[in-house]
Image 1 (cartoon, helix red, strand yellow):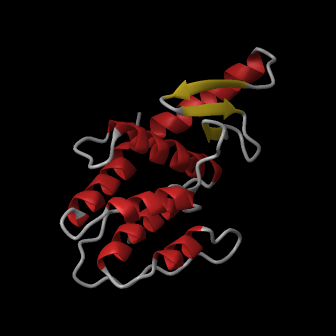
Image 2: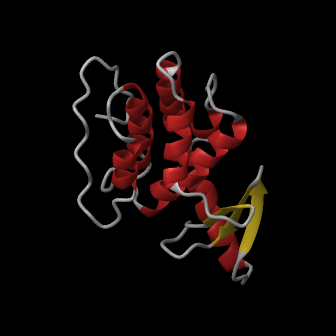
Image 3: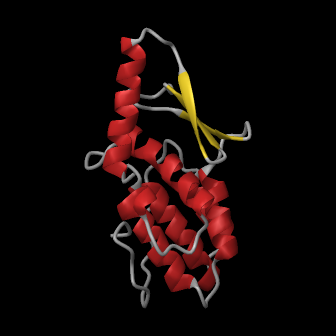
Length: 171
């Protein structure tokens, strides 16, 4: 499922729920539980993994942890592939469950803050990329986490990253 498919899927689930007169429903994807509706907008949902809500900074930390100088380009290509193709992404360095987590976390952003008026999934992917960059450049991961948890503030300016091929979402 790509992002357009995902937005439509969640909107259709919401419409079906209303048509049937139900208040809530849920389904599982791997270890993730998606309960809808959420509280922000039509199509929004609540995401949990074994009762815990996955956080963007957890994704940032994982990407930082798995990135090395040797695999940096593959990590970035994988992030770009997921950004473009969603669950249809292929040749990614991450395991299936992590791709699912990235997808379902960022699909919420696409539903609640749709592009082009807002940043949608682009903003979290920028932080995910910066986590990989932090591993190969002298950027403290705590700075990336602060930029990730920038709720309600002005969006951080993108880093000027000379000598690195930028993914499609970091422009």
